[in-house]
Length: 175
Image 1 (cartoon, rainbow, N blue to C red):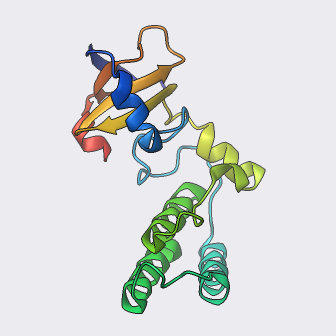
Image 2: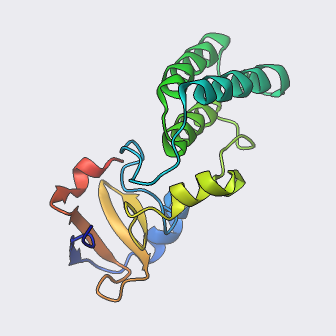
């Protein structure tokens, strides 16, 4: 597979805006579209393993989370759990399962509940962080624009705006 073709344009330095947007920053190896199919060679997740993951995560959250309904109603949590179960049961890659779990954690709206790719098993962590579907950039979505905060690619500088990757418009990359 050839290297990604990144179309960019220089913009004013993001300065203070970047520091304000830091919580939204994407890690250097974050997938462009988390909902994308798993890259070739990525670890597969069987239907049985996905079902087990969903069952364990749901049981752990409902039995152990002390603030599950502190910021959301029971109905909102049940709806979020149902969405997680649907996405989780359909997951066939660690990335899709991690996304489903991250969406569930975000739905709780508790700052102590979040997912971490570095807590995954080595094979899953490797497929999530080292696939060929990653860009060597740290980016943030600011006012509908993907801005580069840092880059391992000399041709792409901090402050550049990513407008497309491999012919896919930035707006279609999610966010």
